[in-house]
Length: 81
Image (tube, rainbow, N blue to C red; front, side):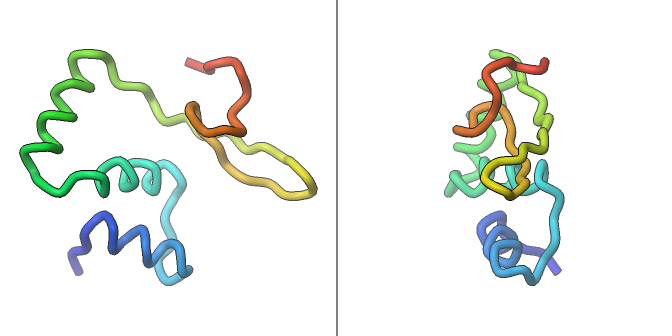
């Protein structure tokens, strides 16, 4: 079954579809576009400026654990690249 990025994220949010965190983050980027041309322009710009690897780290805060990546509010100050 084919899904849009937004549909896949919705299914992941409600627990129907399990996805690894890096996939979710990539789909969040893709879901922001309403046209293929906009996505291609964005991808070309990322290729020119450098593509940041998505390297999630597990953090423990307030008795819970969660994954975070560079750019998230809870990501540690040092960039691990």
